[in-house]
Amino acid sequence: MTVARPVVLCISGIDPTGAAGLHAEIEVLHGLGVHATSLVTALTVQDTHNVAAVLPVALDTLAAQWAALQADGIRPDVVKVGLVPTAEQAAWIAEQVTALGVPVVVDPILRAGGGAGLSSRDALAPLLRVATLLTPNLDEASALLDVPTDRNGMAARLRRQWGVDAVLVTGGDAMDDSVWHGFADAEGHFESPHARLPQRFRGAGCTLSAALAGRMAQGDTPRAAVPAALAAARIALSRAWPLGGGRWIPGR
Image (cartoon, rainbow, N blue to C red; front, side):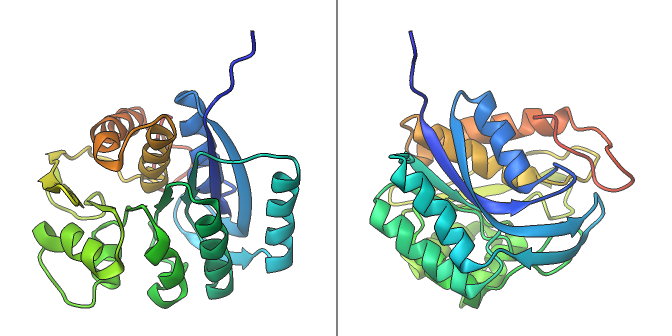
């Protein structure tokens, strides 16, 4: 007997190392029993240290990818958005996901782990406004806020500023002894700290946001998805391994 799976549409870039981007998202979703379809926003030149170049996919090619999926009757249960390098792409994606009317997880990727700039707040603004769940790290959260605040108030303030249902601010990019995460939705705010692992990772944010999208495709609310997704990401990071000479790859 054939059993249909939930479907997540992943909109992001290609990482040749397989550490982040669409490679990471497909691995996570497959492990959750969720099928991943994809729209490729960018080709990249990168290794496990940093990103050297981002080559955006032409908007007409991006639109053609989406038109082909639609013509085949393929409809996602959730959309997960990662790397979107241009304002033109962001505006178009925001229009498409609004028309779909399904939950949207936006991981607002502004910089690579090695520090290279990948996008900007102004470019991503249309997408930020249509997200169901935003998942910035601490640096990204600071960049997205109009008014600075301490980390305890970031998620709630971002939620109000951008008019989204929920925000999870992740603290893996900080250098504290422990990793702090803060979540806020209409029901309130909670924090989820845990001990920091010794390595530095590539694709940790993609792993977590994909796990959140997968749980939501299976019916969870953002609030219900967070504990399970954080646990899944933690397991993947605990199994990380050194592919090259830079950051370690999560064992998804």
